[in-house]
Image 1 (cartoon, rainbow, N blue to C red):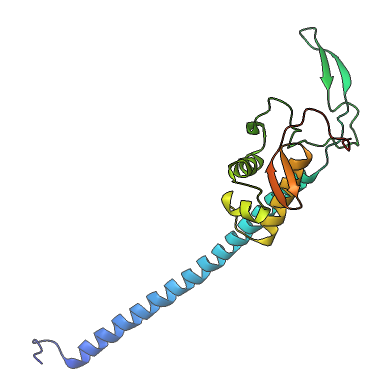
Image 2: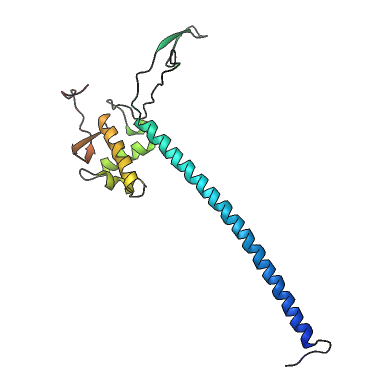
Length: 187
Protein backbone atom coordinates (compact mmCIF):
# COMPACT_ATOMS: atom_id res chain seq x y z
CA UNK A 1 0.00 0.00 0.00
CA UNK A 2 1.44 3.33 -1.05
CA UNK A 3 0.57 6.31 1.10
CA UNK A 4 1.22 9.79 -0.23
CA UNK A 5 3.31 12.15 1.75
CA UNK A 6 1.44 14.07 4.43
CA UNK A 7 -1.07 11.34 5.00
CA UNK A 8 -0.74 9.20 7.97
CA UNK A 9 -2.68 6.06 8.67
CA UNK A 10 -4.30 7.64 11.73
CA UNK A 11 -5.73 10.57 9.81
CA UNK A 12 -7.17 8.23 7.14
CA UNK A 13 -8.98 6.21 9.80
CA UNK A 14 -10.26 9.40 11.40
CA UNK A 15 -11.57 10.58 8.02
CA UNK A 16 -13.35 7.27 7.43
CA UNK A 17 -14.85 7.37 10.94
CA UNK A 18 -16.09 10.94 10.33
CA UNK A 19 -17.66 9.94 7.03
CA UNK A 20 -19.24 6.88 8.66
CA UNK A 21 -20.67 9.06 11.44
CA UNK A 22 -22.07 11.52 8.88
CA UNK A 23 -23.62 8.64 6.89
CA UNK A 24 -25.11 7.16 10.10
CA UNK A 25 -26.58 10.57 11.02
CA UNK A 26 -28.08 10.90 7.51
CA UNK A 27 -29.59 7.38 7.74
CA UNK A 28 -31.13 8.21 11.13
CA UNK A 29 -32.46 11.50 9.74
CA UNK A 30 -34.03 9.73 6.74
CA UNK A 31 -35.49 7.00 8.98
CA UNK A 32 -37.12 9.70 11.14
CA UNK A 33 -38.53 11.39 8.02
CA UNK A 34 -39.77 8.00 6.77
CA UNK A 35 -41.49 7.31 10.09
CA UNK A 36 -43.14 10.74 10.00
CA UNK A 37 -44.24 10.27 6.38
CA UNK A 38 -45.48 6.75 7.13
CA UNK A 39 -47.64 8.17 9.92
CA UNK A 40 -48.99 10.87 7.62
CA UNK A 41 -49.62 8.30 4.89
CA UNK A 42 -51.54 6.07 7.30
CA UNK A 43 -53.70 9.01 8.43
CA UNK A 44 -54.38 9.97 4.80
CA UNK A 45 -55.30 6.36 3.94
CA UNK A 46 -57.65 6.18 6.92
CA UNK A 47 -59.29 9.46 5.89
CA UNK A 48 -59.69 8.20 2.33
CA UNK A 49 -61.19 4.93 3.58
CA UNK A 50 -63.71 6.77 5.81
CA UNK A 51 -64.72 9.07 2.96
CA UNK A 52 -65.17 6.13 0.55
CA UNK A 53 -67.26 4.21 3.09
CA UNK A 54 -69.34 7.31 3.82
CA UNK A 55 -69.96 7.94 0.11
CA UNK A 56 -70.91 4.29 -0.50
CA UNK A 57 -73.20 4.24 2.53
CA UNK A 58 -74.96 7.47 1.54
CA UNK A 59 -75.36 6.17 -2.02
CA UNK A 60 -76.86 2.89 -0.77
CA UNK A 61 -79.21 4.68 1.63
CA UNK A 62 -80.43 7.04 -1.08
CA UNK A 63 -80.88 4.18 -3.55
CA UNK A 64 -82.81 2.08 -1.04
CA UNK A 65 -85.11 4.84 0.18
CA UNK A 66 -88.63 4.20 -0.93
CA UNK A 67 -89.83 7.37 -2.58
CA UNK A 68 -92.67 9.20 -0.89
CA UNK A 69 -95.25 11.05 -2.84
CA UNK A 70 -94.07 14.65 -3.08
CA UNK A 71 -96.11 17.35 -1.44
CA UNK A 72 -97.41 19.62 -4.16
CA UNK A 73 -98.71 23.05 -3.35
CA UNK A 74 -99.46 26.11 -5.41
CA UNK A 75 -96.78 28.69 -4.74
CA UNK A 76 -98.61 31.42 -6.63
CA UNK A 77 -97.81 33.11 -9.91
CA UNK A 78 -94.24 33.56 -11.11
CA UNK A 79 -92.87 36.79 -12.55
CA UNK A 80 -94.06 35.65 -15.97
CA UNK A 81 -97.59 35.16 -14.65
CA UNK A 82 -97.46 31.32 -14.80
CA UNK A 83 -98.50 29.30 -11.76
CA UNK A 84 -95.55 27.81 -9.85
CA UNK A 85 -95.89 24.48 -8.09
CA UNK A 86 -93.44 23.61 -5.33
CA UNK A 87 -92.65 20.02 -4.38
CA UNK A 88 -91.35 21.31 -1.05
CA UNK A 89 -94.32 23.38 0.10
CA UNK A 90 -95.59 22.24 3.49
CA UNK A 91 -92.68 19.84 3.98
CA UNK A 92 -91.29 21.41 7.14
CA UNK A 93 -91.00 18.04 8.87
CA UNK A 94 -91.64 15.70 5.97
CA UNK A 95 -88.77 14.21 3.99
CA UNK A 96 -89.39 13.98 0.27
CA UNK A 97 -87.81 10.87 -1.21
CA UNK A 98 -85.66 10.90 -4.27
CA UNK A 99 -86.54 8.45 -7.03
CA UNK A 100 -83.13 7.53 -8.42
CA UNK A 101 -84.49 4.69 -10.56
CA UNK A 102 -87.62 5.78 -12.40
CA UNK A 103 -90.37 3.34 -13.29
CA UNK A 104 -89.92 2.19 -16.87
CA UNK A 105 -92.38 3.71 -19.33
CA UNK A 106 -92.70 3.17 -23.08
CA UNK A 107 -89.99 5.06 -24.92
CA UNK A 108 -87.62 5.25 -21.93
CA UNK A 109 -84.04 4.33 -22.63
CA UNK A 110 -81.49 3.17 -20.02
CA UNK A 111 -79.66 6.51 -20.31
CA UNK A 112 -82.21 8.00 -17.84
CA UNK A 113 -80.83 5.68 -15.16
CA UNK A 114 -77.94 6.46 -12.82
CA UNK A 115 -74.70 5.12 -14.31
CA UNK A 116 -74.39 2.00 -12.13
CA UNK A 117 -77.97 0.96 -12.94
CA UNK A 118 -77.41 1.70 -16.62
CA UNK A 119 -74.31 -0.52 -16.55
CA UNK A 120 -76.28 -3.33 -14.89
CA UNK A 121 -79.09 -3.10 -17.47
CA UNK A 122 -76.53 -3.18 -20.30
CA UNK A 123 -74.74 -6.24 -18.85
CA UNK A 124 -78.05 -8.08 -18.47
CA UNK A 125 -79.06 -7.11 -22.02
CA UNK A 126 -75.72 -8.36 -23.41
CA UNK A 127 -75.86 -11.69 -21.54
CA UNK A 128 -76.77 -14.73 -23.66
CA UNK A 129 -79.34 -15.82 -21.07
CA UNK A 130 -80.43 -15.26 -17.47
CA UNK A 131 -77.61 -13.89 -15.34
CA UNK A 132 -76.87 -13.79 -11.60
CA UNK A 133 -75.64 -10.86 -9.49
CA UNK A 134 -72.27 -12.52 -8.87
CA UNK A 135 -71.73 -12.70 -12.65
CA UNK A 136 -72.62 -9.03 -13.11
CA UNK A 137 -70.36 -7.60 -10.38
CA UNK A 138 -67.01 -8.12 -12.17
CA UNK A 139 -68.51 -6.95 -15.46
CA UNK A 140 -69.38 -3.57 -13.96
CA UNK A 141 -65.91 -3.17 -12.50
CA UNK A 142 -66.51 -4.15 -8.87
CA UNK A 143 -64.56 -6.70 -6.84
CA UNK A 144 -66.38 -10.02 -6.41
CA UNK A 145 -66.92 -9.50 -2.67
CA UNK A 146 -70.05 -10.51 -0.78
CA UNK A 147 -71.00 -6.89 0.00
CA UNK A 148 -70.71 -5.82 -3.64
CA UNK A 149 -72.69 -8.85 -4.82
CA UNK A 150 -75.47 -8.16 -2.29
CA UNK A 151 -75.54 -4.46 -3.21
CA UNK A 152 -75.80 -5.38 -6.88
CA UNK A 153 -78.55 -7.91 -6.10
CA UNK A 154 -80.58 -5.18 -4.36
CA UNK A 155 -80.11 -2.94 -7.41
CA UNK A 156 -81.26 -5.79 -9.66
CA UNK A 157 -84.37 -6.28 -7.52
CA UNK A 158 -85.07 -2.54 -7.71
CA UNK A 159 -84.72 -2.65 -11.51
CA UNK A 160 -87.19 -5.56 -11.58
CA UNK A 161 -89.59 -3.67 -9.30
CA UNK A 162 -89.43 -0.61 -11.56
CA UNK A 163 -89.96 -2.59 -14.79
CA UNK A 164 -86.46 -2.45 -16.28
CA UNK A 165 -85.62 -6.14 -15.77
CA UNK A 166 -87.39 -9.42 -15.10
CA UNK A 167 -86.44 -12.06 -12.56
CA UNK A 168 -87.07 -15.27 -14.47
CA UNK A 169 -86.37 -17.44 -11.42
CA UNK A 170 -85.06 -16.42 -7.99
CA UNK A 171 -81.69 -14.76 -8.60
CA UNK A 172 -81.79 -15.06 -12.40
CA UNK A 173 -82.24 -11.74 -14.18
CA UNK A 174 -83.17 -11.04 -17.80
CA UNK A 175 -84.14 -7.97 -19.82
CA UNK A 176 -87.77 -7.05 -19.19
CA UNK A 177 -90.38 -8.48 -21.48
CA UNK A 178 -92.57 -5.44 -22.00
CA UNK A 179 -96.16 -6.07 -21.05
CA UNK A 180 -99.09 -4.42 -22.77
CA UNK A 181 -101.30 -4.74 -19.70
CA UNK A 182 -100.41 -4.44 -16.04
CA UNK A 183 -99.86 -7.76 -14.28
CA UNK A 184 -102.76 -8.86 -12.06
CA UNK A 185 -100.80 -8.38 -8.82
CA UNK A 186 -99.67 -4.82 -9.58
CA UNK A 187 -100.40 -2.03 -7.13
